[in-house]
Length: 416
Image 1: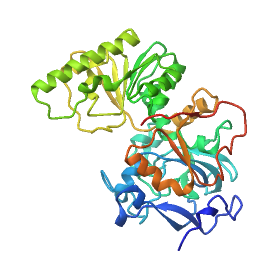
Image 2: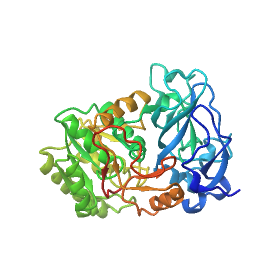
Image 3: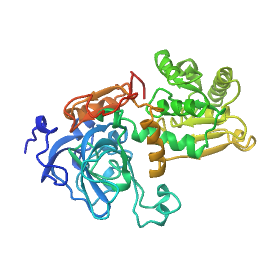
């Protein structure tokens, strides 16, 4: 049945009552491939909330690379994560309105305006109570390892995933920061205990993670230097509070590709030394913390340039996850490598308060209509986007949802 996308912003029911069906962008296992083909609009039954669950009417959604993976079925098919559902509705960032609550939900009521964080875990896992939900065996990323993501008129979430929507942001601005910002917050604030005076090297400083890492360093009183791939992006990083920036194209030879000959490795290491000197010139000394998510290409340099007893914190491996480096610089200088993955509900709430108070601002490149979901992911797949993309769902146009004065998003052409 054809779905009328012109009516996506209109819902026939009032808060508290769900319609029977909804429009959703759906991936099915038999059409995994390029995002532009894998994502197709379907009419799907609206789920009912179980105990401690909430149905949210999605007003806007954020686009992340995880659903490029979902569309392509790599590195593994998402259907391995939720085999009980024969379809996948992606989207791990979203803002919207509480529409119906399940049994046991007392903090939220129909009509509340919310932002959704993407960490789920079973309330029955003991790790959730007193340790960290991210250690629970049931832990999953909503909208990637689960279905019912934000690329639909309605989505199903756990009540603990909801945060108050910042009044100073529009719907699309509120949907553009959760996954990357909360990840950066945990990496720096909790895992590395970021403090005033710390020196921090940020890879990909103009990208989805880096723009928040840079702002967090600024408000904490830490000094940061950002690595970018153009001087234009460096200007944005400086605007966000960095001490300076380094254009990585000037140090292309330091990138690890794997399988280098001894001569090539010697030359690469020489470039890493030269890069380390450039970092010191800006920060005044070697960094206390290196903010990593690039992986294979940069990790040997990260371990080398961080100061003795310093920390390399990593949450991804966008250039490859098989890392090799000279471990002597790790043990002999007593450096630390810290793995980090998203954030728990407490961290998300504390980080969201900084958004509400205007101390941290989302950085948004483009807002697209609901019919642009496949195109947006294809842009990401081909690296043709220039920053965070938001998708309008229930919001009829850009600029809606802001109910208080205060700084909104920064609109800039930033890199990944």
